Length: 349
Image (cartoon, rainbow, N blue to C red):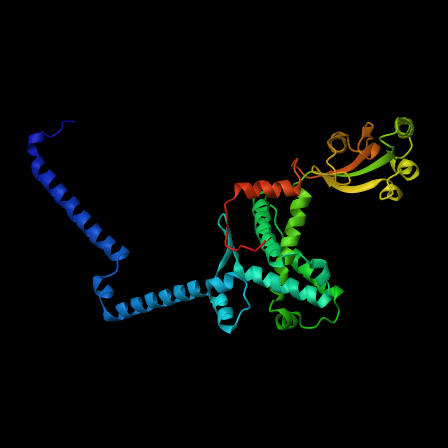
């Protein structure tokens, strides 16, 4: 096929027309786009628009002035009056900012009212002497937020049904309690919604503790000795070796504990110490050999003989939960150090 001679085409004319068309399309597109993304100047300059704009600006300025002027009273937990109470309802004062989350000051104050009401009605004031209740509840609210962060990271959650079931169980224990919301509002300015927040946080912490920190259920047998008496120590060693041999030849660990253990707290329960984590301390002392024996001995087997400040021990782990070699407090503190926390409340020491 023979192509036409390029001279038969007016290439310059085609080029000019094409350029002109592109320019026209670009101008129309720009004009249409401006109509979409920016309002007409006539709208902005109308008296009605200006009145609305300046009214909103004035309201924002008044709002900020009120918020700033009442802040000293609000943040110092002073006795509120009607005006300051109203201001707290319209201004979301933050008590703390944790990463991208905010702990509301109103939430902390509601917690304080609730707990102080409980203390007064149960007449347990003496038990809380020397404890700064607002500071403790403030720290609790921050920790609850950190636990929520941990839970989300590990895909742990609490369903609405679980919260409602727990709430109904509480009501069932308090037969004839009446209109709960009315009573709560009348006596301490809170609501069932606020109490359900407490329930949610408690259930979430329990789930995190159940699934994350490594824990073992363990039993032990203790044969005590006088550390300053070599003869006492030798006798204790001979006894614990015999107990170990009996267990290896078929005697149940729990039966040996009931018969031979000198730990009065756990002896009658077959030496059961319950669930312990990797930060476990024996009678308040950090006994690494005892803790290592708990977590390094195979489930269902008796450990080698361990010496601690109390005497000689045998331990038997029977169950295990969790996936992290950290205690709950260690997990929380690690999250705390990795999270930016801004506190707005300060308490006198």
